[in-house]
Length: 428
Image (tube, rainbow, N blue to C red; front, side, top):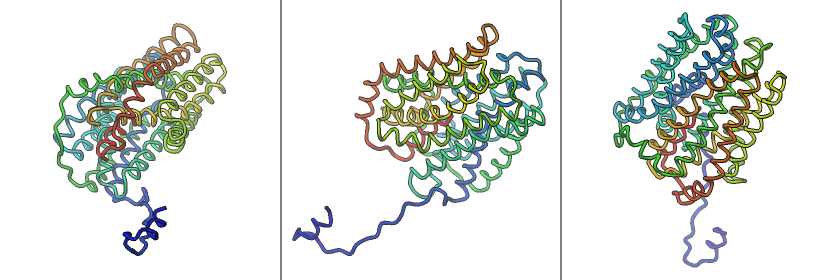
């Protein structure tokens, strides 16, 4: 159409054709980007690292299932609260120092957890690990965006690849090192993180603080906006099901050894990674963000309900865990996109508000679920998870018009820094 107009319009100047350059590959990046990406892989390992060793920790430290579930609760709760201060910290000391502070905290608290002699100590040090993870994760993507070559999309692809590799390999590393000792995965993370600290310190240039200094009150003010509050509430109920699956899954597989649990959750992580990067964008383009999000939430609730019905059949539980990765991966990406488009405030502030609500609210899931397992039966945790996610579906349906109105009324695009800040808030 443009060529035809150029030939027929007398005012059109004659120009030589310009050959468009192919988009830059997300894999051709400076060493600074690869250093941060490597650290991202190790940081995201922490999400599923303890799954294969939950039963072993309970046996070795004479703890109940609900007590070891607090390894998730303390980690996620502290990480959620800490998300409120990450913007305050990074806007004052800069991204590089914030990244290094987070990595050092992970090294220290992971090693202390591995050295512990009681389940209470492991829970406490796991909480410190959550603080380090919050400082690192909340800064990592924006750092990759600013240091990478190419577009924002290329940077996010690289970040999502690191996220997926970390989530998928965490349970596998936990199984491999946990087969030697339950302490092994904790010490393994410390060693890998020490390498990441050295690489980040050497290869990442200094990043002085830029932009407006945020305050602790900003995220709470952001939650006054209905669309953001609705999406945060949906994420609370969705995370109740997510964390229930992570904590209750291993205990519903009594005949599985550490490595078998590790492989099961490795399959879960692979599906989560692939669907978040490949499948979610296609569903979003075809059906829209909100309809696709509601459908995936409903499918996740159905998956948990099937696991609840057949919780005594280990093969069904194992397959259900793996399949859940697909629904979780798609939902992670879609909810991120919804928050990115609907938030009428600065994206770093929206990210902090959203992450605070969903992590702190959802963190009670593992404890409640395994208390139900102790006092009711093996089916109860999955019924609890299914019911929680079903409530999330109802909230999403009730708020669909509000969220759609916010999405359609928001600007069509955001700056790279804004997009990076909100996307990193959904990297769980």
